[in-house]
Length: 199
Ligand SMILES: [Zn+2]
Image: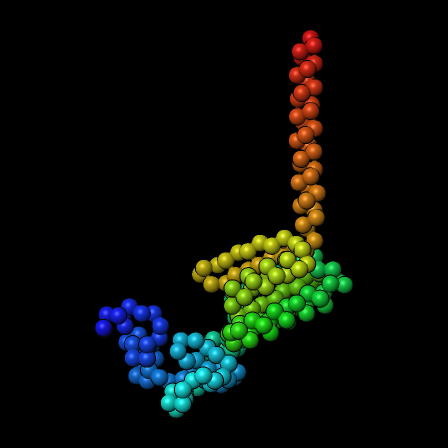
């Protein structure tokens, strides 16, 4: 019986792991002073909903990782969007804020830290989570068409995404150019060979 419980991965109330993670009070709830998010059963949630009364008795105040990150000017995800046409800027910003709302709804630790115009046609978006930045970058690429590249720094656990809008067309044209160049050179080869044969 004991072994069975030790092997299960669900948060078993009496498990040793749970007890050591938060010192003596294994059932304590952490509440963020800034955003009111609460930590219970290994995850941050928006509020006390779903937490049993007995556990709510032991609430300790803290700062959640997202609020700490904001206060310390840190981030985990960075997206640089280049080649932003002036007339698309608002649409892109709307997509980002809609995405941010949906992500936050799912996980209170997922937040957009800032959206800045760093140069003409260049936006910089910072997020609290790197996965969030990756998903958002993919979404922007899908919606507005462009080329993305990702760089992950394991040491800083930071993801940097770069999106260059409007280069998909260029890529296609380049590919077509290459194809016709190849075709031309093979035609040239064939012509040279038949010339040789004639001699
Ligand atoms: Zn917070």
